[in-house]
Length: 321
Image 1: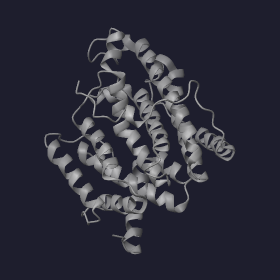
Image 2: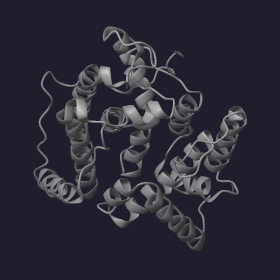
Image 3: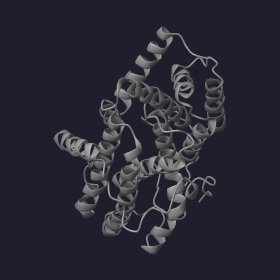
Image 4: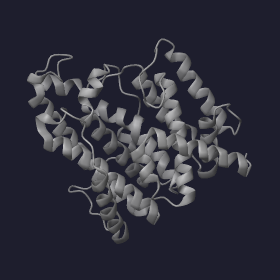
C-alpha cells in the first residue's frame, strides 16, 4: 500500500540521518546516485543498520550489549520485517522504510531473510571452518545486501546474472573488511579467518593476532585480498548493466574498497599497527577514475572468466565451527 508523500519524506529524512551517522563511506557513495535511487538506498540502509543493531544489541555498530536474549531479538527483526513487506505499520521508522522501498522496487522477503541470516551468524558468534564457509558468511552479511541494492538501482529481481555480480561487490567489501579488521575483531572476540587457514599456518587457537604470528597473519591477509580482487573484477563487469550514475557509484565503491585491501597487503606485518583507510583525496581520485570507466563502460572480463554466482554461496548458512 503506497504511503502518503509526507510520511515518505519523513522516512527518507530519518534514513538520511541514519546513513550519515552510521557510514560516511556509504553516505558519500550514495551522493553519486540520482535523487530517487539515493533516497531508496538510504531507506534500505536504515533497515540494514537498525536490524544489525537489534541483532547485536548495540547502537549504530557500537559496543555490543547483552547477548542473552538473542532468540527474542532475532524474532523481533523477522516479525517487523514481515510487517514491512505486508505494507503494515511496524512502529519503527527503519522497518517502515524497508516497507516503502520494497514496495517501490520489488525487494522480496527472501532477500531480506538472507541478510537477517547474516545478523544471526554474527550474533551467535559463529566461526568459519573453511574458505567456502567464510564466503557463505560474506554472502549473508554483505553480498545479500549488494543484491538488494542492485534491485534498488533498477535491476530486475529476475536478472540473475546481474544480481550475481552485485553479490560479488558485497563479497569484495566484506573480504576487505575482514583483512583490515583482523586484530580489531579479535579484540571483540570474533575471528572470520577460516579455521583451516589457521591450521595450515600452524597457529594455535586464539593466538593468530599475537606479535610472533604477524608474518603468517600478513600472508593470510594477502590471501584475502586475492579473493577481494577476484570478486571486485567480477562486480565491475556486472556494473555495465546499471544506469550511468549507479554504475559510477558502484565502480567508485569497488575501487575504494579494493584499495583498502591492497593497502593492507602492502603494509604487510605492520597492517594492524594502525587502522588502514583511504584518505579523502584518494577517494576523490578513485571517483574520477570510476567516472571515466563508467563513461567508457568497457570493463574487462577477469582472466579465466566468471563461473560462479550466488548459488555457490547461498545454499544454506555455513555449519557452526
